[in-house]
Image (tube, rainbow, N blue to C red; front, side, top):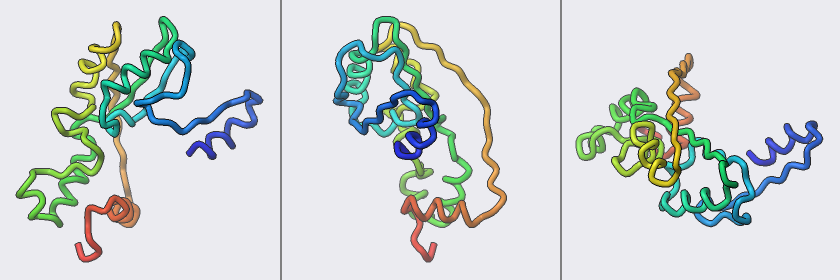
Amino acid sequence: MLREAHQHLRACGHPWQFVVCDVQALPFAAGCFEAVIANHMLYHVPKRAIAYREIRRVLKPGGRLYAATSSRDHMRELDELVNMFRPSASQRHGPVSLISDRRLSTGFNLEHGASELAQWFSSVALHRYGDALVVPEAAPLVTYVQSAGYLTEDQ
């Protein structure tokens, strides 16, 4: 993704820097960023409190964190469809989430992300928007589900 972003932004003439790092141990000086963008990734972070402390540390005074996440119902229909082919899993554990921990009460999701961030940042604003994804062909959806490892070839 970074290589592709670099290719697209090269024409802007700005000397962009791209760094792969752990949000729980950011390799940047304190107060060096006006904004940090956490786009659909906080639900993957094992110790979000450490990540929030690090993000706060690297933000300049008045800097902003922009965090996007999904609802607990995100991809619910796909989860239900997959579970039709995994009846033993759905009976034991309820609907299986295909993405991260967003459905857990401890997960970072739309339903409680703002309250979690409010513990670390003085001002938090939640902006909701509706969206939909329509997949007109089955093959790409099946490929996606298989790539996630949630169905066997037979299923």
